[in-house]
Length: 255
Image 1 (tube, rainbow, N blue to C red):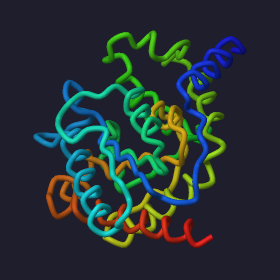
Image 2 (image 1 turned 135 degrees about the vertical axis):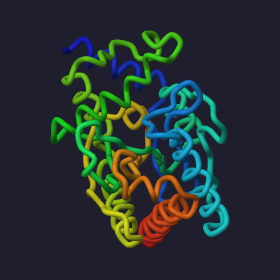
Image 3 (image 1 turned 180 degrees about the vertical axis):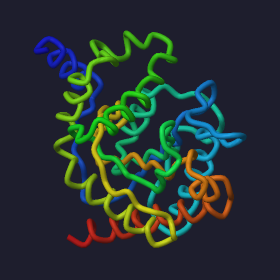
């Protein structure tokens, strides 16, 4: 275990992941989950990668139009496969002040589960959260040279996933604040909020700024599916996330 910790620490230092954060929100990186050969979860003709991209582009457009001076960078703007380590690297290279991941949820065991939930990097609180994180992290296996890019990271080890959480402690407070704002705004558009949660998502672990991972709803739920599968529903979700970002920015820069 100590050997794995050492490897992860060296990886963080060599990748330049530890950076200083300013008090201003000048650059926001938005990450549309999955893409290309990785469709994510799907139900009928609806695919996570398509919904995530649509919400991402709508969110980015709102930020660019309504928050002058804020630069928006996308990890992807088309249906392409981007490795998890590269998504994080894009945020780090551009010294982003916020990192927002957009995803869609699913539950193969129950169609009753519905609503959004926004994750921050942290210790796993429930087995369900751990299973979700490990499922999302499995995309690593689709990457070329994944063993080289994720030195010592064992996908099958709950302890390894939990250890990843320790590297985000510096940004936990700000991440939780933004995540709470997102869930509050989403609840205002008639979409159920399942609250703020913690999980060891690889893409959040490797970023050096406050970051959130928004699961916008369950494709396995009929009500959520109607929201996720329509342009108007996707726009409402994007608008809710935008309003949260706007309030977060105003509060942070007021100090």
